[in-house]
Image (cartoon, rainbow, N blue to C red; front, side, top):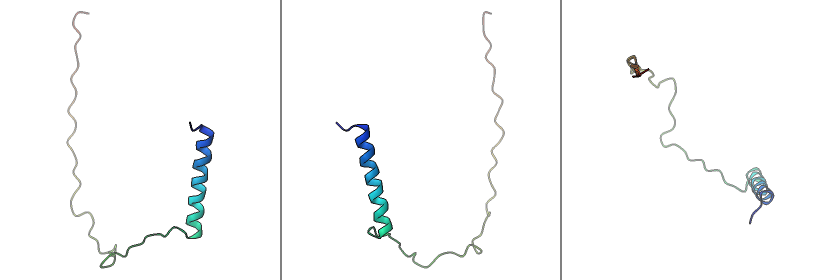
Length: 68
C-alpha cells in the first residue's frame, strides 16, 4: 500500500522531472500556424446585436399556515 509520504515523494519527483524537461527543451512545444493568418482586431465588428434584457421576475406567493 502506498503511504501518504510515498505519494508526496513520487508526485514531487514527477513534477520536478516535468519542470526540468520543459526547461531543457526535451519536450517539444506544438505551435500550428493558422491558415490565412490572424484577424486585425480593429476591423472586427463589435456589438452588432443588442443585449437581451430579461423581464422582471414575478413576485412569489406566500404560504398561509392553517390551524395556528
